[in-house]
Every structure is written in structure tokens, then in C-alpha cells.
Image (cartoon, rainbow, N blue to C red; front, side, top):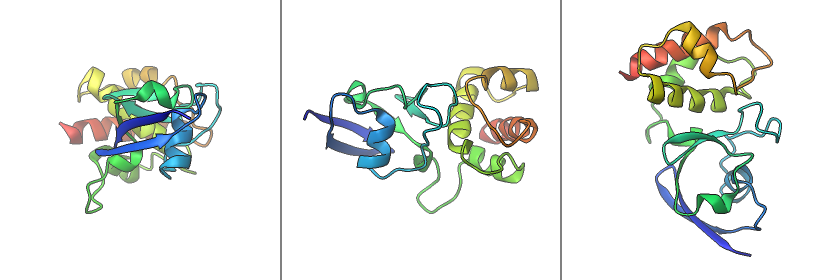
Length: 156
């Protein structure tokens, strides 16, 4: 089996993987970073969103070997070492932007990418449009949109 090396949440990691191993499998099974979820295996739900070299990507359709040398950030890499939440995580908590929590890690990672691409002053239409690839089966997105807007402002 080939070896893959990358940096995950600021730490260099290496692992032997089959050629067909998906990034989400490598993160969850090899590294035990289970915050990244598998919701559909077809890249439609967004539960698996991580950042690959600073850009949001769906880890359920990305091969681990494609990430050779990449810098990967998962939901586990956002909070500070002392446990203080990232401003976007805190905004989701404060604005009740989750219910069951299954989609939340992918939503937060997608939200950070929305801020990266669109800035800190986001309107509801932009947020809803940009969240098109992330599904939540519990909410009507109202509180998720509020949380993303508040998190974006807090990050400024």
C-alpha cells in the first residue's frame, strides 16, 4: 500500500492507504478525527467538508492520495488548544445553529469558506446561496444563517 503524508490540523501525519481510500476515511479511520461526517457518499450533503490548503472541499469524494503534501483543517482544528471555540463555532452555539449536530461540522467549515470568499459582512441571500451544497435535515436554516452572519462579524 502506498503511504500518504499531509499536515492535519497543524500536525504532520503519514499513513499507509489503499489507492481508493477517501480523505474522509483516512481522517476518521486512520487518524480518529471523527468530527468530519459521512452523510451521503455522493458529495451532495456537505457533512464531510474540510479545508484542503485553505479551501473548502468535500472529503467524501477526495482521495487521500490526492492530498499528498496538503494542509488539511478539520472541525477539530478550529478551537484553540485551551478549548476556546473559534468565533464561528461560538456563533453556532449562541444562535442555536444546530439541532442534532450531524451537519454542523460541515456547515461550520463551509461557513468559514463563505467568509473567506465573501468577506465579513454577509447578507442572508449570500449565505443561503453559498450554503447550497450543505444539507440540514433538522432545521429550516434560519438559525444557521443567523449564526453564520454573526460568526462572520465576530471574525472581523
